[in-house]
Image 1 (tube, rainbow, N blue to C red):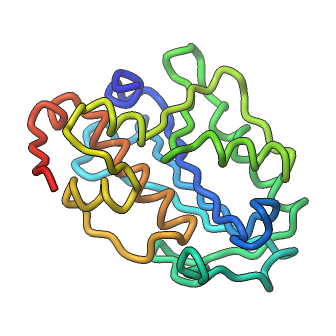
Image 2 (cartoon, rainbow, N blue to C red; image 1 turned 180 degrees about the vertical axis):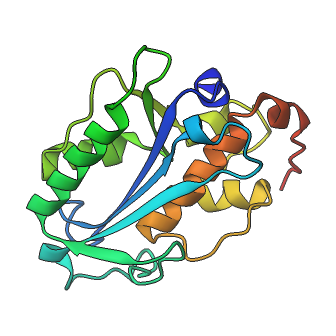
Length: 202
C-alpha cells in the first residue's frame, strides 16, 4: 500500500458515502469523490486534487442529524451536483474510463482509497450497481493508520486528522471526507513522513 502511493505512478481515487441514518443503510444521500493524478505533478509541492460532490436526487429530501451531523450542503471543496441514480452510474463509468485511459502497464494503474472503505464499496455495488475494475487495488487509510502501531484504540477519520495536525471541518459531508481521506493517504503513504511521525498518546 505504501509503495503504491509513494511511487507516484498510480492514480488515487478516494471515495466516501453518506448514508441515511434511519434507513438501515439502504439509501445513499451523498457521494464524495476525490482524484489525485500524479502523472502531471510529480514535482509539485502540494497535490492538485479533483473533487466531485454528488447528491442523490431520489433521496435529496432525506437528512441526517440524529446520529451524525447533517452537513450535506457544507461542501468546502466547491460546488455540489444533484444527480439521479442513472446519472451517477454514468458519471462513475466515465470516470473509470478516464482513469484507465493511457495506462500502458500495470505500474500505472488506479487505486481506490477510503477510510474503512469496504462498506462503501459494497453499498455502491448493491445500491447503485457500480463496479470497479478488478485490477484496481484498494487501500484503507484506517488500516494504514493502524499499521503505525501506536498505542491507541481510536482510528476514526476525525481522530486521525487531528493526530496528523490536518485542519478540518464539516466531517460527514461526503466530499469533505473523501478529500481529507486522500490527504491522510498521501501522508501515511509517504515513507519519509512515516519515519518522522510522532503521535502523542491521549
